[in-house]
Amino acid sequence: MGKYTYKPQGVCSVQIDFEVEDGIVKNVHFTRGCNGNTQGISALVEGMNVDEVIKRLKGTNCGGRGTSCPDQLARALELSKNQ
Image 1 (cartoon, rainbow, N blue to C red):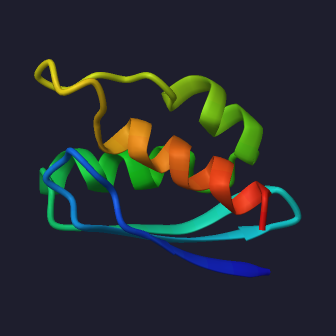
Image 2 (cartoon, rainbow, N blue to C red; image 1 turned 60 degrees about the vertical axis):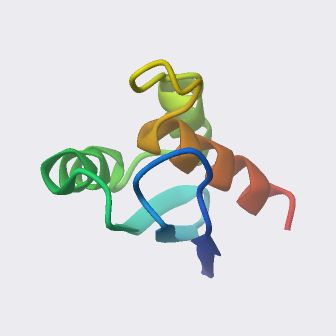
């Protein structure tokens, strides 16, 4: 099982912690950000395949920023695949 910490950029959240076990996303936790939304994202992706989460969340835009907390999670998961 891999445990990861990612420092997102361009969003309200300052840190994303998560685990990946056999290609499955587990224990996602956002520090700061829109609490209800980040809790919802975490609950929805728990138990999902990494590639499916990336496919669904990558490119999500928040307020014209060109990124979002879901997009940042997708980017973090992409990086975790390369480690």
